[in-house]
Length: 427
Image (cartoon, rainbow, N blue to C red; front, side):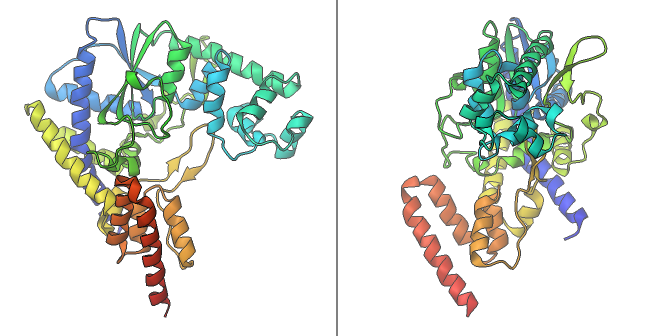
């Protein structure tokens, strides 16, 4: 299939499936902000995804002839930048958030990702700089805390870096914050919002996100102060409307993510003010819309009628969401081409890029199962690995998601069926 056909299919998917969802998002965002019109409040659009959400909202306001009801600001923030800015003052709650992102990595790998000044150092040099008891240690809260509090050169350097980032972070946030702050972003569990609320306790923080759900089933104190304007679920309910987005949420995230570097921290500019690092505020890619899904969404925003009532806006959203859910859970070959997003970039100072689906090869059956388990869009990978059996396998996979009680029985059924099919094919 030619690249042009793929690009055209992705643009249609952006226009027909994603456009109505984001128009509904903007309509609800407008209502939420109107409720704060008479209060000391600001809308903070969190980079990277929030920048395009602000652009969408600006088009929505222009099309409907409205003006923003509260001040609008771009907020260059990531979970890594938030961790760096908040850790020195709130070590106990922030350290587990930071360390969780480096599960399975070595302590030196974590140091290199968190401290850019050490990235040019070789692995042996970083190991040599560690206190004796931490050489060869894995990245976890215990080893990180031991290094952070160590009376050793590397420990002192780390503490100084986090303290400096804390001061820069507060200077950066000061002109942006109001008494009540509405964080606008993709979502999903509000980790950065929680860190901000604990750090700036004299301010109020509310999250207005594309989606909200508790991915790990943890106690999340920020949840009552979050709203998912497209999908809002306190727990994972795969049978609920929009539940399919939990299984492939990258389709609503990727079009919003500009091809710019994620904020890793803050630095001083020539005037002595605090600015994000890397400083991408003048990056020419901020104005680019070369992503086919994004282009499709903007086509919808440019062509949609502006006088449709809110109930019709919601009906269109629900229809698009049902279609998108079917395509996610039971994709055709063409659906894969139209919905596949580029490799996902890792946060937290890592350069890793993760493909949504893995390339099929002539590897044995066990490798096919491995690829399905490790794909970010599992139903898409199932279709790629087993084109004929895909509807049945995807139905079983969905049944497992919808009814956890059936998981064990369905899993055995899938394994037996696949083993039987593989034996027949091998004859």
